[in-house]
Image (tube, rainbow, N blue to C red):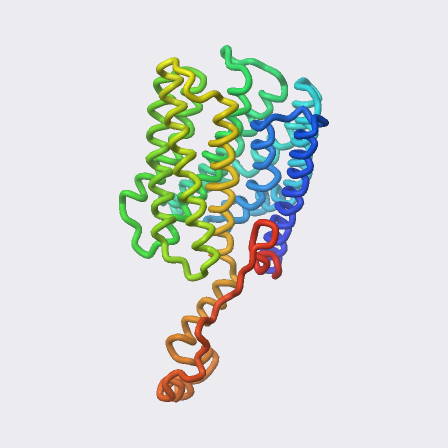
Length: 368
């Protein structure tokens, strides 16, 4: 338990450090000192921030079958992420590809744990399938990152489509799959339509990626299916009744952010199919990408992490016990009945963790 706790702290501190590094890169790009555009910056946010937080959440939802391999990958994640940053600071070519290869090696280790888990019968629910396929999506995205940094053009595919595919599998593949699994596991009675939408969300990214390369029609249809799935997950988040107010704020804001992003994605896909320049790729990256990465994905993962925080759960259960009996669980039954007879005069109004929002997440989320 101590090892897992230390690993969670490591992932969170890595994410905090990643935010600082990413903000520095944003400033350097804005001042012209770094050769980075919006798409590059959005991608960098994934290995620096989203992946360490996402791996922490994935481990809480469904642990991989090769925990030692995945734990080693999580420990090495900050170094591999810095290698990705360095890869984007130089021109495409062998050296840039070599730096990106470290990220591919790390993602392959995580994907191996996910793929091995899929072979086990006890890991074949929709919720576990989403988490494990999300782990595999990281490796697919890392392969496209390597292709992008090497400067290769496969089957006529060129930038920014290659890098966008890497972005796609890190966010829409990995992160959204975790949010879908969380939406299922966070409900006492999950409706069948939500299971179907989560399955749609975890499979659609593969068809969208194929559409990017081979068929605009396939891509447009797949984007429509994915959009329906993501909207369903967002609606499920909106309807959830969270025990902690800050969790509800994170999840509801996450859901609201994605509605606008999904509408833009559908318009862009339809325009490309009809050969109309309704939205350009840079405009899509600037609006849809930011809404998806910093809105839906980041806020959604933060909400789920706070929701599953052991300290928060302990205090919430303590609060339920107060509201029910007027005493702590450690007190005897006689004392509980006596407290009930007194009319709950000594029961606090609300036993809960106060969660503030320094930087981008709750203080208690990090102070363990």
